[in-house]
Amino acid sequence: MKTILLAVASGLILALSWPTNGWSFLSFIGFVPLLFAEFTIRTTHTQRINLKVFGHAYLSFFMWNSMTTFWLYYSTPFGGIFAILANSLLMSLVFLIYHIVAKRVAFTAASSFFVVLWLSFEKLHLGWEFSWPWLNLGNVFANDIALIQWYEYTGTFGGSLWVLASNFIILKGIILYLQHKDSKIIVRSGIRLALLMGIPIGISLLLKPDTSVDNSIETIVLQPNIDPYTEKYNRNDQGISKDLVDLAQPLLNDNPQLLIAPETVFAEGTEITSYTYSEARRFSKLLLDKNDQLNLVFGISMYELLKKETDLSPQSNFLRKGLWFNDYNSAVFEKMGSETQFYHKSKLVVGVENFPYQSTLKPILGNIMIDLGGTVAMKTTQPERSVFKLNTGYSVAPIICYESVYGEFVNGYVKNGANALAIITNDAWWGETQGHQQHWSYARLRAIETRRAVARSANTGVSGFIDKDGEIIKKSIYNEKTALIYDLPLYEGQTFYVKHGDYIPRIANFLALFILLFGVTRRRK
Image (cartoon, rainbow, N blue to C red):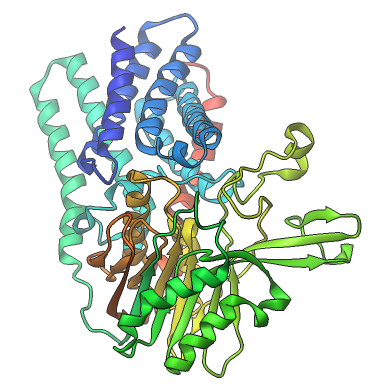
C-alpha cells in the first residue's frame, strides 16, 4: 500500500507541475516518489517485481496524462482516451526498462540510464508516426520563461535534463539518509541540488537578449471565433471571407504590412490548380487592392487530383478507380505582383490528419481516421520548411498548429531565413480548457529557442504577439471575435540551438545504448 501511495503522489505532483495552472518547480520532485517506490520494490520484494513496477508506473503516468491532457476528450472521445492510455503505456515501458537495468548496475549507472533513456524516449516522441510530445518535460517551464532563457542553447531538452537530474539528486539523498541516518548527507544533497537549480537560473537571469530590433512590420492577427463543430464546415468560403474583411477593416486604416488569419479558415476544400478562381483568392485580391503593401498569410483546406500512379506518394488517398487525391492543410501567402505561394502542414495530428504506419495497421484496423469536420483523409506533407518572403525583403515562417510544438522542426524555418514566426491554428476543438492555453504557452518556448518574435492567429483560443524572450506583448481571450495589431519585431542571426538542434538527445541515445549493453551483460546484482 505504501508504494501505491508513492505512485499516486508522483502522478499528482507531475500533474500539478504542468502549465498553465501548475507550479513548474514541482517537476523537480515529481519522479521521486515513484522512483523510491521502484527502489523499495526492487530491494524488498521477491515475486513478480517487474509486474509490480510496471503497475505502479502505469498508475503514476496515467494520472499525469489524464489530469493534464483530459481536454483531448472534447475533440474526440476515442482519440483522447487512446492518447492517454497509449502514452501512459509508453512511459511505463520506459520505466520498466530502467527497472530491469537498475537490478544489474550500481545506483549512479542506473540513475544515468533513466535520465538518458527518458531523453531518448522524448526524442522518439518527436519523430515517429505516433508522435505526441505534449508532455516532454522541458515544456513544463513554458510559463516560467525567466528561468529558461538558456533554451536558446539547449532547446527544451535542456529543461528535461534539468528536471530529471534534480529528481535523482533528491532520490539519492533520501536513500542514503535512510540507510545511514547521517544529517550530513542531507546537507551535501541540498548543496548539490541548490547548485543544480541555481546555476541555470542564474545563467537565465544573466542572459539578457539583445533589445535592438533589426526591423519591424505592422501586423494584424485575426481571431474570427468560428465554431468548428457548428459553423466552420457548414458555411461557405464566401461568408467566411466577408467576416474576415469586416474584422480586419477597422485596422486597415493603420496601413499594416502583414495580415495573418487562422488555420484552414477557408475550409470548403479548394482544388489546388483552381485556386485562382477561389473565394480565398478573391479575398486576397480585395485586401491587396485596398493596400498594395499588404502581405497576407492564412490557412486553407486544399486538395490535388491525381490520375497517374507514378504521381502517388505514401500519403495519397484513393478516391475511385484511376483517381487519387492529395489532401492538404495549407498556408497561403499573397502579396501584390507576386505568384501565390503555398506551404503544406508537415507535422500531423495522429488519427486526425495522419494514419500512422498505414501499410501495416490499415489491413488490421481498417480506416479509423477521426472525423473533425472537413475531409477525413490522410494529409500530404512536404519535405522542406518553406518561408514566405515579404515585400520588405524579410521573411516569416508559416507554422501550422501542431507544428509549433516541435522545437527542432521550427528551427528549419529559421535556417531557411525566417525573421519572425507566424503561427496559424484553430484551437477551438477543446473548448475552454487547458488545451488551447498550453498550446499558446508552448509558442513562448519557440520564441526563446529561435530568438524570433511570434505572431499567432487562432480561430479562437489565444491570438497575439510574443517577443523573442518569450514575453507576451498582446493576447486575446478565448471565445472572442477580435483583431489585434502590433509592430512585430524582425530579427536576424541564429541561436546555438537553431544551428545544432537536438544534440542533447543524440548524445543521450549513445549513452543509453552503452549503459543498456553494459547492464544486460552483467549478472543481476
